[in-house]
Image (tube, rainbow, N blue to C red; front, side):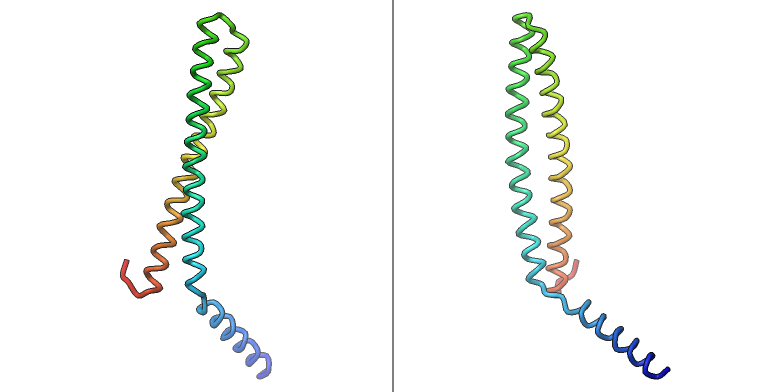
Length: 114
């Protein structure tokens, strides 16, 4: 019985040591990765906006010329581009909040308040 209690105590101590011994370099690496992900999301959003502008221009031209089949296709493409823009907006917002949390963790590890 004493052996079991001692082994459980050792496992608890080892578990707490590993949980508390985290390296802050990983936090900095996560912050850099979040910044890079945010940059890529912004570039993707710019490309989606450019595609949406082109689809709107094509839609106007197709409606002006009376080509309703191509106009239907352009509307479908425009809906897809708008869906991509919404998902990019959500992704950017998520990345910003994730980055703030990482910065807060780094400041806390350095001993700053906040």
